[in-house]
Image 1 (cartoon, rainbow, N blue to C red):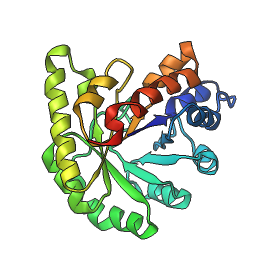
Image 2: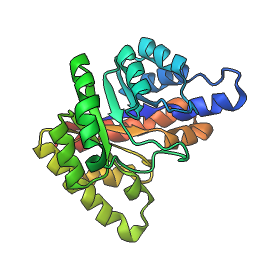
Image 3: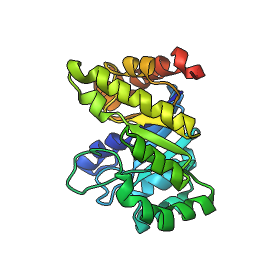
Length: 245
């Protein structure tokens, strides 16, 4: 179990002024030095944060795992195959959304992914993870596609009120157990922060890569990026579940 840091919103801040600062690649270096085991970025169609040139620079400089989040459009697939990251995480994407709002609807994308997407990544030897909600049908279809991993969408848990937290944690626990039984690597992300990470780690088994971005960048404004990443990395890496359950 390890922390991956999403650096998208460092690029968001840079783009607000268009003057090259802060540099998301420098942020990635600081995150890794502070204890992150890898870096996540989402290259969107509208390039609202990460840009093409960032992707190639990250490939050259990131020492740990590099996770390329993307919608499975032909253009994005071409870029990802050129870059050859360690992992591609396929996510739904809508131009109008502020952030990724839920997991892939696997029944609707299955045939397209099976014929057009999965064979290209398999041929290139790039590991695939699919971003899915914690429900059994989507996990089963992910397995049938031949993906190596899932990333469980934790946003519903993160945004749930206290009366619903236990229900959402159970959904995530059951999903992780089922995915693990199918041989899938289980990752998780979306909406996680210092306030909700420990219950997730306590209750959900078999977690591998934990992706956190926005909350760390927010905390870093007051405490410094290295301090924020170092604190979260210690919580995750030192948790008893890091050795597997």
